[in-house]
Length: 350
Ligand code: AMP
Ligand code: MG
Image 1 (cartoon, rainbow, N blue to C red):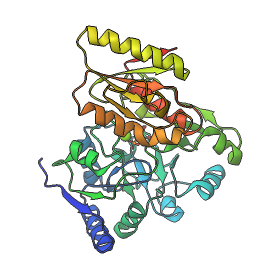
Image 2 (tube, rainbow, N blue to C red):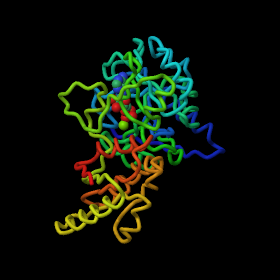
Image 3 (cartoon, rainbow, N blue to C red):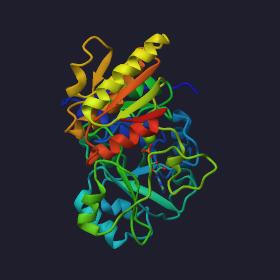
Image 4 (cartoon, rainbow, N blue to C red):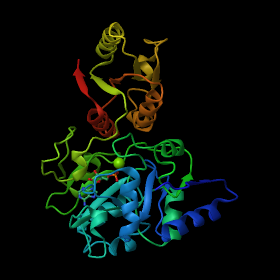
């Protein structure tokens, strides 16, 4: 199924017409990629089975990996879930629109294909003007996973979406780069103590300020397919470049020396390396192919640049990406480490 992917470039003059046109494609059961504040999403009518199936087909996503449904109001969310638990209601007030996905019990109207057959549904309101208008004009809830081929790094620019999905989706709205760069925090609100299933910009500590104790139900491993896990996404390789990935974690000086050793080892074996560095380590590797993910004490920069960096190096035909893991694991830094560890073939602690 080869599609002719239409690209809407957003400029102020044509803004509204373009988004309306994209919304009509969604209403007709088509697939449209669009920017959110986290990463680009690939949207389809969440209540239309045929439409949602096209998302799975375009991405090559395993059928049991459920999608996040994007809405533009709490009222629209109420149409999808049986009830909104009190704590979920508090989180909605504080964090929506924003990078927080809440899992609640679904109503029958949400089809199995959207929830991967689960009795729960994941919902959020994104904080991005284009995304919100698109949902509003479409007038339907929009199921939207990240707009990448399954297993590849999530897209943070329109170019990334096209490089994975051109010819596989009906349209793309090019709204420039995203502001956060890693996917939303996912929290399961159906258990007595709510549980984080995926880390994101909104941290455990932040959530606990408003609703008390929160469990951590994720880890940084890829689980075997035979295992029963709380979130099907935990079983699948994610975020991975084509090249091998080695993560070197530790203090700046130790990380730099170990990366130098690794480069020497690989060059003896004629393997080409590319580096994802921090601003602080950049000057140590002046001639080596590298990409900076930002200052080590500002993990929000690492969040914004990580997937871009993976793709940038991947395009340069290297064998191994070595990641400088000396950036702070605080707040969103935890989410960045989670993505890199899952992508890594080897983790070295120094
Ligand atoms: P993506 O849409 O690519 O950002 O991935 C969505 C993530 O949310 C995946 O890790 C899913 O497994 C997880 N998820 C979505 N819906 C549910 C649900 N009902 N229960 C548990 N995890 C879910
Ligand atoms: Mg994804």
